[in-house]
Structure formats: structure tokens, C-alpha cells
Length: 203
Image (cartoon, rainbow, N blue to C red):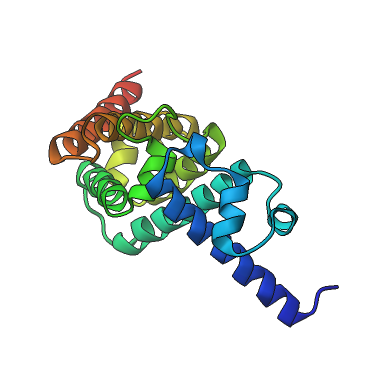
């Protein structure tokens, strides 16, 4: 069993690796980042880096998880579960939080959405979107007008996963075309998501 000091040192090393990788994402395309360069920037050997992450993709995955957790915290901190706003304004708020997050964290936008003129599209995956969809569905269950509009409960997790993918695909288009998520793109993402919700609830 590891001692507490050893665990803390490991956590500090992992944190440093993630910070270094985040900086590299801002400097070069994802496909050009190498474990050797990450190790060099982090002040460790390639062997030491391998002890924590077997490949750069495991590092990207850890960063992606960190970004998704930050998004989760922002969304759930922003919305008071006791409030009963209509679901449309609630979803507009969620879309706005996503847009603001990616505009303020370009490394997260590059990793999860893609970057203008980049060969690599994005590192997001179905599993991550599924987890986000589950969280958002739990949040949206607070808005009774959505359940009433649906005729029973709010739409399923599968539907919310598609909604999240529609929203992030729209954001990705904006990032790759303009290098940022403009107000117009954010509005389009919100409207496309709501349109899908409405269409599925009419089925």
C-alpha cells in the first residue's frame, strides 16, 4: 500500500503532466504532440511518464475527463434545483455555459471540439457524451413543464445524448470555422437542440 506522501507526489506529477500537455495543445496540433516532448516539459524521463500514462492518448483522455468535470460543476452550480424555470430558458442557459467555457478554455475546445485548420477533429467520444447526457437529463427533470410537454417523464438518456451531440457538433463547426463559438453559433446550437427535443416529444 502506498504511503500518503507517495500518493501526494504521484498526484502532483499527474497534475504537472496534465498542465504541460494543456500548454502543448495550445502550441501545436494534437497529432504532433509526443510523449517525449511531454516528458521533457514535465522534467521527467519518458520511462517515468510511462509509469503514469502509457501513451499520449491516455493523457488526452484524463484531460478530457477533467474538462467534462469542470463543465458539470459549472452547469450544476449555475442552476438552482429549487427554481422552476421553463425548460427552454434552462436549456438556453446550459448552451450559454458550454459556449462560455470553450471560449475561455481554448485547450478544452481544441481537445473536445477541434481547432480551426487542424487535421485532428476532436477527442470527445460516445461514452463521455453519454455521461454528460445523463447529468443533463437529471438536471432537466427539475423543469416540470418539460415532463408535461412530453406527456410523462422527460426524454430518455439516449435522446439527451443525441441532443448533446447536436449541440457539440454545432460548437465544433464554429470552432473549426472561426476559431471560437460566436453568439450566432451558440444560438444555432441552442435552437437545434430544442428543435430535436420538440420533434422527439411529438413522436
